[in-house]
Length: 537
Image (cartoon, rainbow, N blue to C red; front, side, top):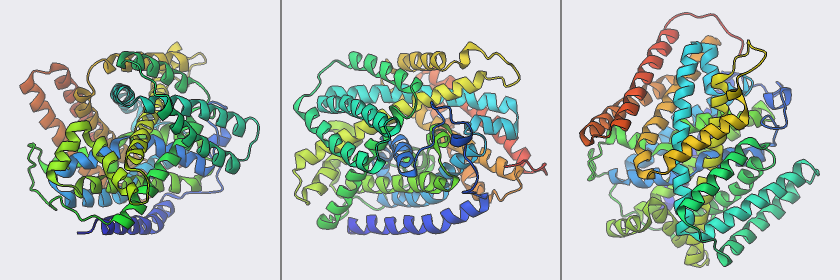
């Protein structure tokens, strides 16, 4: 099997799905390009700021991509490449893309509020409280895991640390000139991207060597600032410029595959139980994560992205299109694991995990374009670390949003101090930082299960909202049932494993998630199976 066919066929399928299924979804939901978005009706200059579609696409794509679509498919390669490919394509088109697009659109129709606020409007205040607590705890795990991962990356690749610091300075300058001095976005983008590569060059010349604990402290200070400052000065321009790194990486990988055309060596199917003891159901659908569907995406779409949406029509390319591009990245990731021998795969994974497998593969593909292998591999490693940092700062801001919403009371004139953005951010950063003192490997399994449960909750919330709005919600029926079954089965297995190992904190967390899933599922099913009054959507 030639790997070039895998990437070309998948791109064609995703393109057809975008044009046909994406347009059908927009028609079913009643997307209205003439309706003003919250970015215009609320515009507060801090969180609600309209952004052009390409800029917002950069922010959204950089935020949802992270390391998930790379790590997940490579880790799931233990089942063979066919199951992973099928889940990426089917899951991306009919599960993840629908969730991302739907979450973004539903948030726009609820004043840019989070999934929690949509739950309150459609399932009741108590359900919203439960969801907000769960989502905030999950985001603490995001902050802890990604602070740890980024700090480790900066220690092992100091050049990535230097370049990342320079990226931040460049992003602030870009935001200032574009949004305060009126610099044209086209010319500014060309200059910004050119300077982006200058930052990479300088980063390699002047690597910043610091200890992990120092980096953890610096990262926590950074995410606090990134969470409370206006979105246009740092978060939005940094994510936009970083997205060009990913576009360049994707383009280099695809063109490299066109010239290289390596054959697939990984078995197509290894069995329903992998060599590491994983059962295909539910582990394949949990491990691939962002490559097919991720609950974190629903928080991004209904958190930072919806508040910057300039036009409802932009929700399709940003929400649905962004997920399908991420699926292409996931396909490339599985190819980097599938074209090498089992022995080479084990050697690369032992030397640096899935990111090293991915970086080595893209480095080899780019070398067929005349790019030095070492330069190409370093560029990919730096790009992945940049996106992990993007997930970290976006996750912190989302945690702040949800914490504020948890204590907001629209009936009171004076709000609790816990709704203050500085206080909410400080609590989120301190607790996330405390969890980051441990190893990310102990946090990741819980995060993976919580992340997929978020997806199931988002899907059932969207179905209930459309049902209450008198619109077709059947596109969510199969995905929400399937993801609930996956999550509950995975949590049950995780619960048994942690009881056996005596990890009582993780046992308590798994029980809490199972109870929450049961309560929300029963409530959602009751609403979906009875007539309801139509609510203006």
